[in-house]
Amino acid sequence: MRFTLHGYATEAVSTLRPRDGTESVYVIALIINAAISEEIMFRGAFPSLLFHINHNAMFAIIASAIVFGCMHWYQGARGVLSTFCLAVIFSLILGGGFSLYLVIALYFVLNMFALFVLPKRSLAEPG
Image (tube, rainbow, N blue to C red; front, side, top):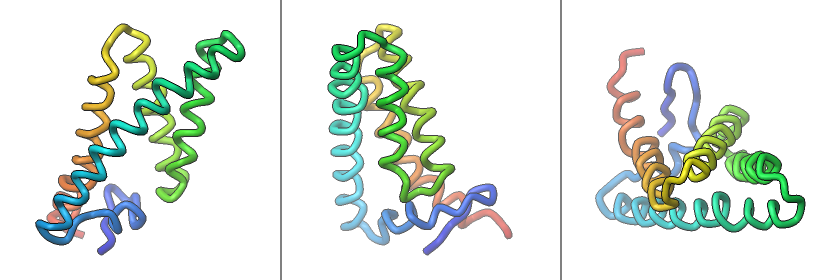
């Protein structure tokens, strides 16, 4: 099923949306895996590697965010841009001294919201 949010078609994401209780368990496992592995890779390992190569923190953050955003190309240009912006924000949260666990939790909550809350909300909206 396809859903839209304020005119933004998220057909690619709606294919991930669970249709029953069993699929919900698998989707939650997928979301946990994505939150942990992607944040360790794109807020931890990859920026650290880039920083050690060129000693420029801003380059490391932006380059990592670009790659992370491009990994979400299946969501379209808007998905890439929003994911890029979230990656920069998450990197700044880490740079502000907060834990990687917080960023993992935030990413988990955002994915849960995108796959469980927004679809129900958009289906309930008229039009």
